[in-house]
Image (cartoon, rainbow, N blue to C red; front, side, top):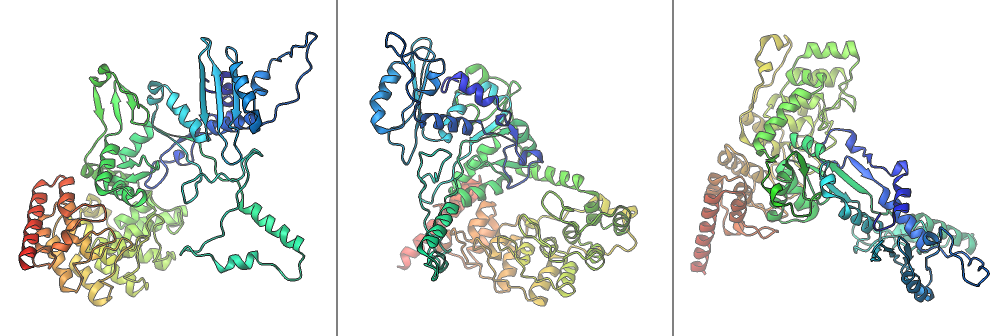
Length: 616
């Protein structure tokens, strides 16, 4: 109201559709790689459009003067007639602003608005103070709304608020296109480009003169295509809110908020890699983002606040108040997430997981539940076949594929993992064999990021022991026709490499081969690296960001793997170099809190550099 006047503010915010509304994502539980905002408000966009329309509208003809020759100002002239729309009216604009009275408002556009329109709002307070604000876009107006909000009132409900950005060209400039008002001029878009940046041959065909048609017809077609290409671009300025309740719900599932783009990511690793890949953050900066996300939500005397909601400095009393930091360790969060996932699984998926084939048959026949349906999945997109294969429930897998027609290559929508990936990841050798030999599933079938079953088997859940649920050991919960595949990682690796002849040299989309996966194991990393060396895997590979297996081992604090790789593994000084973000393995170990390993790596680097100098 202070910026645009109370009447216009009430007019906009009284529109029912301009009130904060729940987003599509806010109607469901928080999940990874989805927008975090659960409420949105479109009012700043509507407000800017109305201001822009008023500022660029030509004033109506002057009203007749009264008897003494003095022009009479009608009641609504203040909100409708104090505008300019042409360059030569600039002097008149300053005169009108100077003549504003108490409580009056002037809205006008910059004189040169042919390409970029700036809305200027000038108000006069009851004390005669003149306030002027300029808004180049709805985004700027929305930023002003957030800035003017009461942090206490906003922070009581909201943990994060952001302003939606408008479409922009590749060079970073605003791609305005034709606006809702006639004052902007559409700009022709450049010709479509192929993936390598060159102009496509199809463009010449589409825009070429067509023989037998008149020039007018060709001109009409060209204008039609230009109109289609010049559709209005998205106008930013919509407010997106993440409530404190949603942040707490997300934290319960170990989901962290990326404050750059407003998406939820899974755990520390998910946010760290997202920050590096999506936003180009360095390794150190990505770790800081993870720490900020974990410590973002703080409770002051029952009032939830966050960085975005409280930019002002809190006073001493609030600082000394009881602080409840919603922070848990990654391990505890992961365990809690696993337990919740087990408890919240739909009954059909639980039966498939636990190998209760008779009960699963009854569920399908009695209720009509379809395990092959696209909706018969868990929160991560895993179906009954994925759960059964990961637990080695071979009889259930055969029932789903042979009797119900499930696709043995069915992949999760989120990352593209198949039953083969889950069976290999958990060392279920007979399930892998059945999928490959009986169902024709390739052992080299990759996920969306290029990870193969062999890589998943090498990692083997990080080398941790596979937990056996109580339900698996209870005799009353076992079917007579249960055909359980026991855990055998050595056998699974042998089948993949010797029998199925998988590609042990494969790399994923990040340029990592199996050696980088082996180096990250918490247990048995040296033995796994030795095995890979024996089957011919190149341990000296560095990925696209310059990470060697030593970088991966250093992040996990795995000194034994670092020592072996720099000794029997054949890695040397080039593999201790800084990565694309400028971080050496020693620096990465230090950033992760592994001080002893960092000191050893720094000393090893100096030693190898000294040997190289002597050799030279």
